[in-house]
Length: 391
Image (cartoon, rainbow, N blue to C red):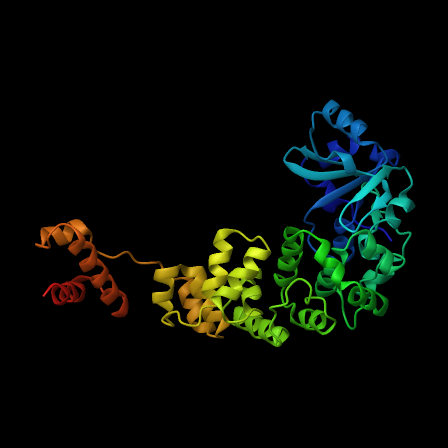
């Protein structure tokens, strides 16, 4: 099979990069997601190149061509090339020397088939000549793409032993690209080795989990993972009805024209308990902002008034609460609502005779509370509210 190389060559700086890596004579090929997505006729996103040249030679060639070379993963053969604004990861062909489930020691090679055999799934181990578009497939990836099937290269247990994160990656790729039942051998291996996930860093787990939850509708895959015990070692707080909750949330997001949100989906599958949500966020080492958002989404005692929620906690928190409660009409309105500002300051109150000091802050809080409850009035209605509060 051949692809149209114009989808890559039309990008700024790519032709110059390919010349630097001698692609005309087989020195470099596009690999992985760029080829997979092209075969699926999906928009090209990140570009990755595999090359026969060792990393130090790659750097020398790029710099000689006036291309910025950043040694982002030099020990593992990866150099990031920045050519006329286009960013491409260039990785030397590799073979694994040792693996421990979290990281690998690699040796560099010039054997394309050997490089393919160390990758995770057949659909990610395809190469394409960047000039002719010819696809090279030594692992059956083309057939799996046509069948919308995600399959490990070789023995799934061996691939998982090399990198435990491949368990979560399998389900993410199945949710994104798969159709029908998942590959039986892969599913059995993932279920058997689920406890291996506990050896991974929390950051890697969180990153992969949020990528999965951010897909259009991961609910069938989440239910499948839960049934096979994948979440037990890493997210034991998961509610029993996780799949249906995400399905309902995805429907509410679609109905309100709200983009899928991974953090909101995570909130959907956790108990309605702020302490439990905060515990999960801390374990996954999420940002402080994300931790606060998860806790707010899980708090059953928050005001249910959409605008009051948005005013006190921000539009994101309000959208989370409304969509988790399947209130898409309210969510659509809140998304466009400009947050108001209280039309009064402490100085205004002092000018009206309120004694300077704690009394000002107390009166301001009282006015603000009544203003929010009244629906954020302005003009004469607001003046009447202030007069009543100060009487």
